[in-house]
Image 1: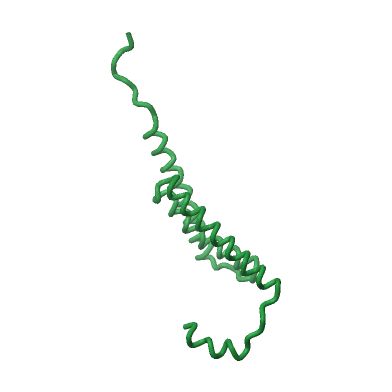
Image 2 (image 1 turned 90 degrees about the vertical axis):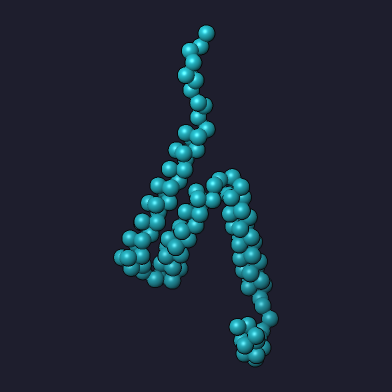
Length: 113
């Protein structure tokens, strides 16, 4: 795609301003930090617990679209966001309870002397 758009870009090319460079730098730093945090989360928790939170990207994009571009989400988008949020909370609680019961010390059936 970029090969075909290169001739058109060269016709209208202009040097980037300092603000544009800062914006690109900020996007790069935040994107790298996000990927780093996601990778660290895989080390700390099971992937089934962390990936359910990935679906919250849909909710955040709807909220940011509404705030930044005045794009009002439809009723089905709001219902889907609520379903995704509820499922994420449910999975997180289930994984927490599973880890708690797995880490609990097994009780001995023998009487102490």
